[in-house]
Length: 159
Image 1 (cartoon, one colour):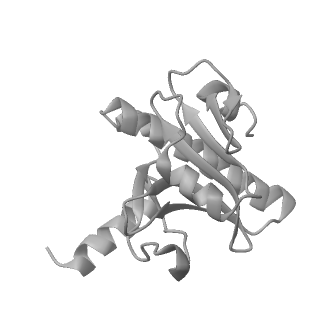
Image 2 (cartoon, helix red, strand yellow):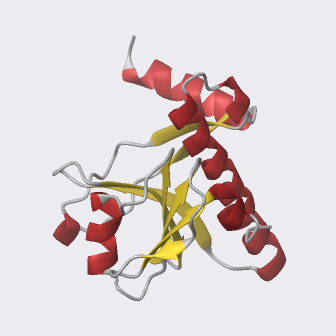
């Protein structure tokens, strides 16, 4: 199948509010990927694999929060993701005026900060970094300043 055909079908599915895609965040100094976009279902219940379903759920809530702040407060926000050529990835980067304001990593269950969020938080130490866990119960902050918390605690802070 040609790339144009696939791109057109994905655009149709976006216009029908079946899916949404996130563009990558990153500068050349971060060796970030530039063109690959991540795809999420707006109906996250359709995702079969539990870890991917949880990531999709967090994506939908962050997208709703970003749209709310754009509509109500008139802020210039975008939801993106980060991946570099060395394989480090952060699931979600919320940007305002093209500068990061929040990093979010979704994990099914972990008490250790992921290497991708640690890397990005080191590069942008003033930006809050949160690792959201599906099965975790502890809400804690690592010595690097990364918050690791259960999904319920994090998602309640959004709209």
